[in-house]
Image (cartoon, rainbow, N blue to C red; front, side):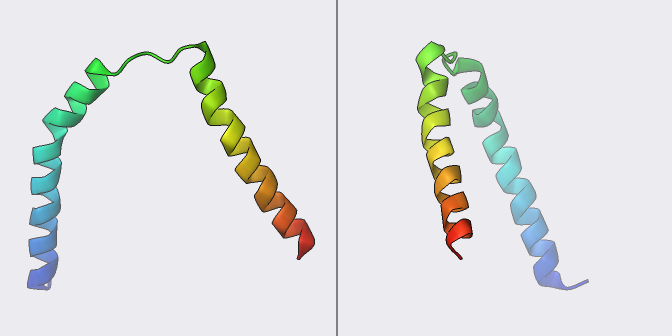
Length: 59
């Protein structure tokens, strides 16, 4: 095994260990989604999907 792979593996594990407590706190303190919040996500997503389909049809 190459030594650079070992160093990258150690760095990734260290990063996960450092970020894990903050991620737990963010998940706990996140505000709940309200009725209009989902429409704000679905509408632009539907537009992007429709645009990609249009581009595929034009090819």
